[in-house]
Length: 304
Ligand SMILES: NC(=O)c1ccc[n+]([C@@H]2O[C@H](COP(=O)([O-])OP(=O)(O)OC[C@H]3O[C@@H](n4cnc5c(N)ncnc54)[C@H](OP(=O)(O)O)[C@@H]3O)[C@@H](O)[C@H]2O)c1
Image 1: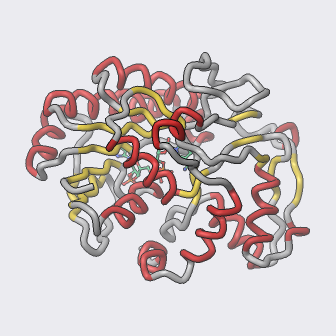
Image 2: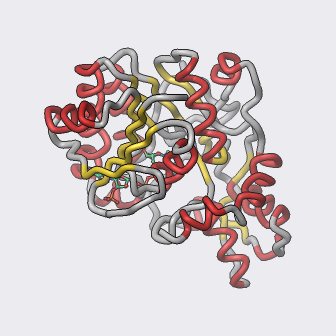
């Protein structure tokens, strides 16, 4: 795409990767909160999401045509411990971002999650009823409603992603790879199913949907459903690491953690149909992840 993209949560895992993926194709501005970072070819701005007026002024100043709202309180256990804070950040700030985008008449991609259901069975579709099991999921579910209520043209993207993160913010695949390279034995759930996607595939899919003028809720996830343990084994195999070190656990083995859904599998059929292509599965995404490791872009991200 051409034009100007503003990414909230600019120092976060997805925000940094979004900027690196798009900076050669359009102007990217990262909206920062507490953490200051600098990325080649990317503008950064402290951005206050508490005030619709202040945010609208910032978006106007950078001539934003599309906002990608990735900022949020993303640690599930921290959300459980501080529900008011989680609700404020995940719901109220998202509603502010939607209000500012609507006022300026610019595009909005709101990043949601797969952490929204308690039912098990087939991968969930966009129209299935939400039934979150913890504070994080409840705040993300409420945020979707508030965002679409404030701005019906918004694109709400449910996802769960991995890729190469900065030193201060590791993704699930980073954690598995580092742990196995140290010779540790990562313990992963055999009873949690999900449909993970490589961040770059997510970003490409979302921009494809934006070009198609998609609005409302879309699942942008990988084509394959698997357990977290199976994902760990697949990562190990792809990186030539000892898969036998990946240990099994069930949710019942970790009673101190906030309650988690057993099934976070999302069907990407709606997004795939509109894009007119497959989104891609674990095998190809992990192969890309491995190729990316030696790239200058990933080295730059990891040096943050
Ligand atoms: N990570 C995953 O696998 C995953 C899975 C499903 C969905 N998601 C969703 O994807 C989105 C991005 O996740 P992520 O993992 O990239 O997040 P992350 O790495 O935890 O980053 C979150 C960002 O939000 C910013 N932020 C926190 N409080 C803020 C506030 N009060 N005002 C402004 N900014 C604030 C943080 O800034 P500072 O660090 O400067 O405070 C940080 O840059 C989130 O909406 C999350 O719910 C993530």
